[in-house]
View 1: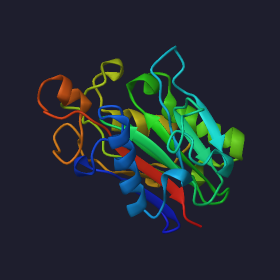
View 2: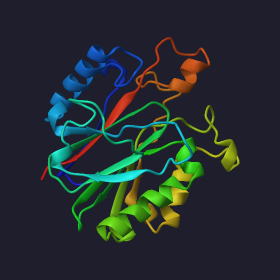
View 3: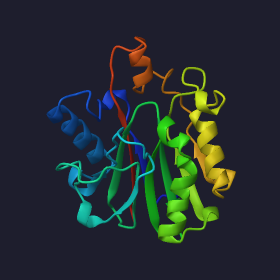
Length: 223
């Protein structure tokens, strides 16, 4: 990604960024982390996930008018991905074992932050989120650059619906099916189930972690 794009991810030391802690602690954790990235709660928008219903490919564009949504005040948008053309508007996604995907089109000057987990990968989320950029922002998939965050690896979190492949493998395949060149995809590769610097909800449920929580992925066009 170019220097004009900010991508940051918190660690366990930054504290949980989601509902595993009370509202005041969560807000303070988010505020401190964002300030270290040069932004604020008031200049951020939450990718607010809900595991309800049967649609996990909910994508929306936000503008500077949405600044603070879900961060400085209650969320008004339930989404699996948010996109913006607004500069210095930070997109904020809490994740544990799932992928936080940053999608950036320099030609159309649009950035997106998507949640790619088991539910939406089953619904071809990697392909659909790319097609959204194509239809809504006239993006050419060959111009889209993608960054995939730390996520659970195949050994401890195989996707049974995809012949036990990893989320990375499935996400990359779906992005390629939408026309994104392989060389445009940067995979962090850190396994949240084995790396103690990150939260892992699945390992917590197995009794292998004392602390539950979510790290946050933040993406923003600086200029």
